[in-house]
Amino acid sequence: MNYLATVFPKAGQRRLPISRDQAMLLMAAFNEIMLGLDTLLAHVLNNTIRPREWIPIIFGPAAGIMLLVAGLIALRNRKTATWLATAVFLTSIIVGVLGAYFHLIRGTLPTAPLGSRITLNLLVWAPPFLAPFAFAGIGVLGISAAWEEVPTGSGLLKLPFGRTVQMPYSKTRAYFFLVSLGTLVALVSSALDHSRHPWENPYLWLPLVVGVFATAVSAGMGALNRELTTEDVTIYVTAMVLLIVVGMVGAYFHIQADLTSQSTIVPERFLRGAPFMSPLLYSNMGIVGLLALLSPQENGR
Image (cartoon, rainbow, N blue to C red; front, side, top):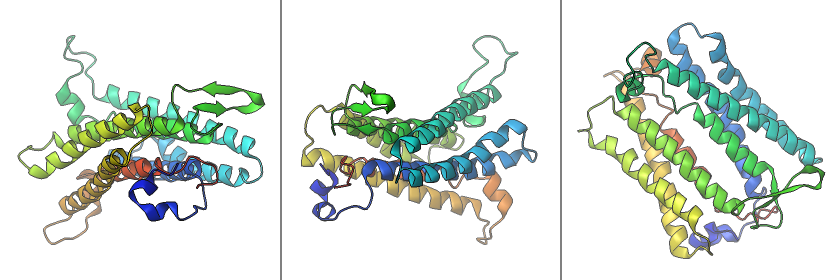
């Protein structure tokens, strides 16, 4: 069922050229490329990028291109394309976990007394240890989209060689949980970043409140083991739209903070100032959340 049509009836009158899973895979490919670019901008602050820091920079665009190639292969051989995409997503998870580890150890004091080696202040000012988990999140989302659910809504994933795996819930509910988890990561990352500034600024509370709301709503949608009602979908869509709007507004404020008083663009300010791409993670999760409402049928209806 196309749940988006319960709120926007015209959405159910049009046949989509791609299925929901294909749309998710396209989002994953786009996100891999953008993460590579975002990592490049973040790591270039060191003036000299260390060898291991090139891993996500190179992997992001390469993974995006390989996923697009897998999409073309899927037109003739879905199994081969699925294996290729799965390999990319598994590697993305490894890259994300390793990146989070490297960021975390940069924010610790190994020679400090026990209890002082990791503190909240260190995590606030250290490289964002949650940021690399975006690679891992894309990997989990992509693997969920790559394997076909047969029959639809059963949670039974069809694997090669005639094998299957039974998930504890349907793929649609799994998407809701992944949206909740991704939004939670964006929320915590935003809160740590904004903790560097006085919370008297009311705009800093906006992503916090909306992030908590969207995290709770999407988790609640995944927990519902029944047919979704119009009210359920309306609240969820509202949360996702708020994520998109807050992300765009946040990007605008970050860009304004990076401009000079004469609105002049100074590249150094964009590199060392407010990360103008970070708020768009909210918008990204909002879009993924809306895609989760599309029909799970392979023909996109």
